[in-house]
Amino acid sequence: ARAAAAVTPVGPGALADGTLVPLLANLGSVAGAADALAKGAEGVGLFRTEFLFLDSDRAPSVAEQQEKYTQLLTSFAGKKVVVRALDAGADKPLSFLNDEPEENPALGLRGLRALRANESILRDQLSALAAADAATEAELWVMAPMVSTVEETRYFTTLARELGLTTAGVMVEVPAAALLADRILADTDFASIGTNDLTQYTLAADRLLGSVASFQDPWHPAVLRLVGEVGRAGALLGKPVGICGEAAADPALAVVLVGLGATSLSMSPAALADVRAELSRFTLDQAKEFAEIALSANSAVEARVAVAAAASSLT
Ligand code: PEP
Ligand code: MG
Image (cartoon, rainbow, N blue to C red; front, side, top):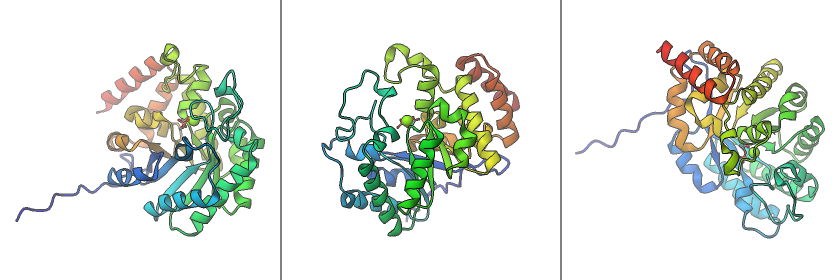
């Protein structure tokens, strides 16, 4: 008889010295769960709930949300699942949250700002998440998108706890939040850096505009400096700092991000294997060295080239 196809065991994400770096999946649908698990995701680092309701012209009810979140959490029983509150606006408009046309939607009423202007929608979502959490075995964390102030951090964290959620955090994707990361992290449980928006806002280049696409490069030392600020604050306060932007899916950059203080990385499942392999080649000290090299570059291109040279001189 033919032997059953060998299933390659996938261990947890780790550096060469054994430092664990959980590797998580970015998901926009419950249907993506099986594929993420098959590719070795240790959990979900970013569940984009707005993708569930892009076609909807009315706010979803608590019951319909609860059903979806229960399915999601059931698929990841025993694992961490970070669910993001609706990030409506700019590149992801939801008609029931973004009804006023805006000249600059990326700088407008989006993310947590839009939710606060429609607080009952945020309350419904957090209540549905709390109910799904109570009925399932995953470790649910919730986070707010597009947070730019300490006050917004307090608002979201307090509301999430009031509605029965135990772990609440914020996304750091606006430079103001990165620069005040120590104060923001003092008032919440964790931070997750969205490098897509953080790059857009740091370089002042619309992430949807082809003519400025060359600016949208998370290797830019200005972006990395901001990531380092958040990493440092997280280490100081003992709070987790994840990365959930596309930067985490670039294997060489993933090592640099860990060197800057990221404690977990979340990415599209297709990238997990390459990132896992690259992390396993280097120690934390080497990752920190690469981070210093990237930070001292003058441009994204220089940073990328200098880190590649340093990595190849080691191996
Ligand atoms: C980000 O901005 O990096 C992020 C993860 O969120 P999104 O891409 O959904 O805006
Ligand atoms: Mg974002």
